[in-house]
Length: 144
Image 1 (cartoon, rainbow, N blue to C red):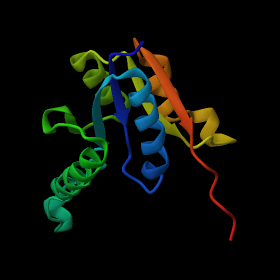
Image 2: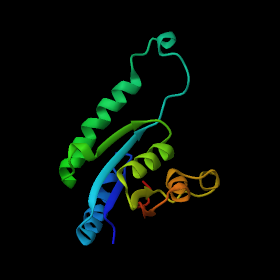
Image 3: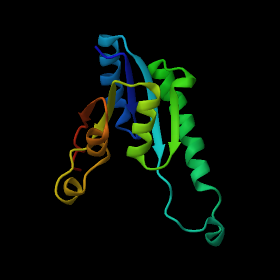
């Protein structure tokens, strides 16, 4: 069975739904758990030109704070928490290799139409991973 799970999260409200699944699988397998969140680089414009502070730095700081809360919910050590900057698929697969993950868990929004044609992060991870990938279908948003 699985020895090391990497939980890739976007730290959105959907994370709560995924936590229950991750806990159950970890409980069933007894696997070590690492968690990762990737901050996508902002488009290539000059922050100085726009008079913008270090937005990526702020995103990373906020992400690290959110990851600490998630880590405490899942009982994950600081050494097993990763906040990366870069292309999401590339960073997740890199960390999966570095930690020796044999299962990556991520959420999938089940997109349709053009979004499906262009692909998603979960799809990219699935096709690029050297280990098993579990994509958890996230609940559909309720129409208001």
